[in-house]
Image (cartoon, rainbow, N blue to C red):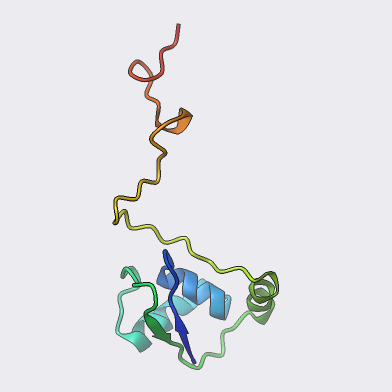
Length: 99
C-alpha cells in the first residue's frame, strides 16, 4: 500500500494515521530508506510494509472523522510557530510593560 504525504506531515504522523501505532514509524523508515526524523515532501509516496501491529479502531476513527494528522513543523518557508503579535510574543520589560 502506498500513501502520499500531506503538507506538514511527519513520518510519525503517517504511522499513526495509517497504522494507529507510533512504533510503526521504524518499519516505515526502514521500508522507505528514510530517517525517522526526516522532513517529508508534500506529495511524496510512502510505501507501507505489511505489519501485524495495527490499531484498526484508531485508524477507523481518523477515517470516520475525515481527519488527517499533520503535526510536523520544520521552520522552513519562513513559518513561525510563535505569532508576531499578541501575548504569545510579548517579553516582560520589552513589549509587555508591567506597571
